[in-house]
Image (cartoon, rainbow, N blue to C red; front, side, top):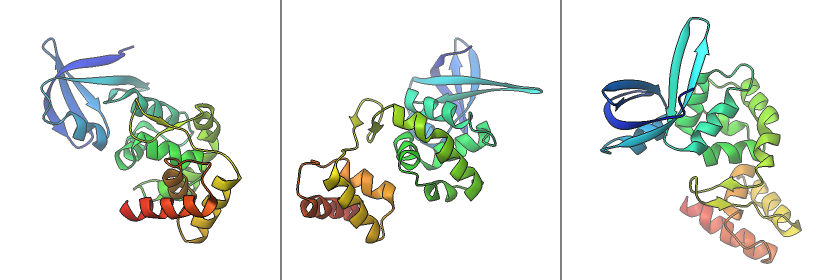
Length: 198
């Protein structure tokens, strides 16, 4: 098993990065988000997953462990292959993906090319518990964890924002950065300011 590759990026294509390590170029299938992160860097390190199928062996590489873990979770869902997993992680960051799953917002996944309603619902259904077990959802990347606050004030504020037309995922994303002990009206007001900026 290849855990990671470190070296110079010698080529990029849509959904592909070639990293040269000790004179060998490793072609890593990857997401648009990873391509953006590694472009222009002298040396990069990608966390990898080797996918072995009947007549194909492919190496997948990602800029963060968080993205690799999201990829591994996605390919455990029947009907979601590595290509579909890469498409999802090209459209959503790991934190956005985790938030969509944790809040049951499958509609965010249906906006991605090649992901229909049935597959999106299946992803949410099968991965919701796995994402929830983590206890937190990273909002800004691998090192910063933002715990979704709990409590009746939060529940009321989420309900109010959903009534105003926001998805549950958007509402929770905005509220996760606020103090859950604030009055409901204050939480709603601050969340709306955050959502308006976004």
